[in-house]
Picture 1: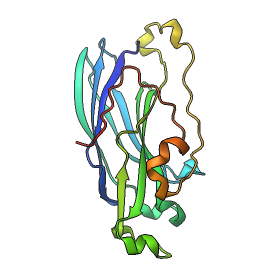
Picture 2 (picture 1 turned 90 degrees about the vertical axis):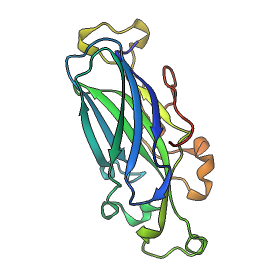
Picture 3 (picture 1 turned 45 degrees about the vertical axis):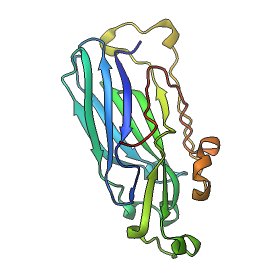
Length: 205
């Protein structure tokens, strides 16, 4: 078992304007004291075809990490739309939460995000240039994708069953925002779902 187990992640704002910040309440347990801090990152996937378009929304070091249970709110700015190709602003994408220890990532949590106009007329006749203030961002809270990577925490031996890391499939398959509720079947940067030791909330706070 890993030294750190993330037990709950609750998104704080699931349907907001595109320019609103992201917020997640994260809970985790540490089974023994760690030598170094944990590093959390929040990343917005800017393009289904080019991971160089990903935007780091925020990162934070959390520590010292002693044995026990922890809870904190992780907030990140909205993505800079000026750094996203206009054709990639609307539709389905992903926001990723990752946690690393001594530079080694051990958990990745991905949420589907859909950007669309709330106004029906704009939906039917979208402007040639995206109208950012009119775009609503919807986060699908009950469909997280959790991937765990076994790492060696402070030279503690890993269980034999954890010898091989779970790898994340890199590609994101873009999906029409009209089929957003079916995204689980068709998705995007296909993050393998492994829900051991994870109690993911199914609604926003």
